[in-house]
Image (cartoon, rainbow, N blue to C red; front, top):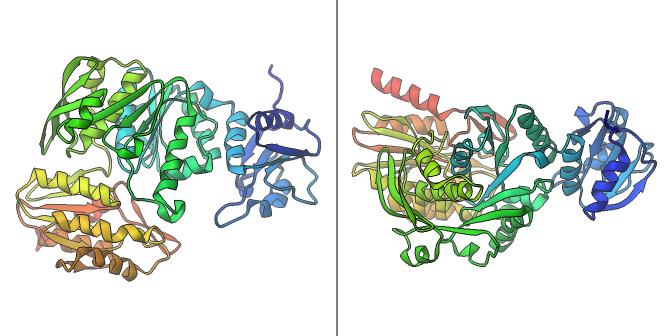
Length: 496
């Protein structure tokens, strides 16, 4: 029988990482669990506290101790507490290391891959999970929640990358279910906050970098630097896969660097790349292209619509190749990738097309709508909004991207949160440059409107929400599944 985990063991973990400042109290208490929410503390837990953007968890240390916490990890000593206190320099990073250790080090016993970038993370992670399944039971974790080894969504997730305790619990559950490979979406917030600090990755993938989350990072350079921190967590012998066409990653150096590119987009970049797609042909059912790797060529038929998905496929392919999946196996398996929920997802095919996509940045909208334009000569109707309480500077460029491709534009709410929806629409309208548009802040009414006016052969694009089935208005999360709204709009249209 193994020795019980103690506060001393946790102190050793934190000391080895350079996080431990001091230990207040005895170190011999046995630790049975871990919690970062004082309302969920049970007897024997270690409670994790740090200063957040809106709350200071040190205020909840007394209630955590009252609930049965046997120790606390804090960024400053809390007076009047009778349990041991591990005082650290970075509570978030410490939380990741402690949670991993308390829950039996699940991350250390799993093969882990990470995908980061402004756009394409979810689709790339979805594809990579599918490719890695040939190596053993494979799961993915990110914006879509937990995708199990059976390819089904096990749960939703509010954040691209979960908090440290939730992440450790999730990895422990996946390990218990027999999963061997896990692909994680690594958000810039998570990397900046050290949520992934306990993990060593077999491969890290960089898709692209464009304006997003500047409300948090302040500058594009700080945003980029947060992404680059992922490289520090690539384990010995691991690989780094980068989009060669993105200048943001031009300075990346690594012993096992794989650069991918689409020759049809940038021939000069492709000449220097290791993994190249060429002769790309796009149709409504997906795309076909030639892959070149190590002097070998293979034909690929990708069943996901949108030319931009060729880059995502290369990113996933590069990662799979780096961990030992053969070129023959990986390229063949790309032909059976399932539809990604909320990513260019077709929900109506006749008499016109309605598709749903998560695109909510200028670059994502550019990629999405340029891809839609390749598929139709009909009228393209685009409904979109922008998230409230987030980077306002990206709103006019988002609208400008839509104006370049749409024949008909509907401005509506995304997740307005606590911001005035009309002010958000004002910011978007500024980017339209006087282009005629319809303005309807109520997203359900707007969807009914754009579906109601569509004609045979048109393409209707609902951008921004994607896989999400709730809308955040104020502090309230209201049910809003666009698939159901579209179905109702189609029913009413048929009854008219």
